[in-house]
Image 1: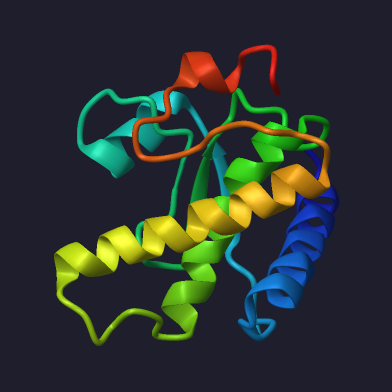
Image 2: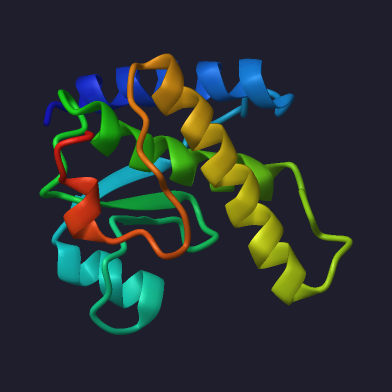
Length: 141
């Protein structure tokens, strides 16, 4: 994918997230690294797992390079989900709670925002902690 294309997609998703979440537009945007699934899984789970994207608390979001972010609404929603985590970190969201609860709150918010975006884009796919790759690529998306 062309760098300009991913930058345009990220800018659009960040604008949508800020309009729907109350998070301000960040001064800088994260680097989006399209990498093999094994790298995403290693970063997300430290072993093979169905993760499609991960934001490991730096300035890089890793997305499974098999996803068609340019053309697939559901694939793009994975990037949106990770961008929510990026904004959560940049805004210090949920820092006042215990780490276990923080993780749950972060995911709850990111999945909720992702669901709204999918609904606005004509999709009704259940995303959540038990979500797996087979369902993602199923007929509902």
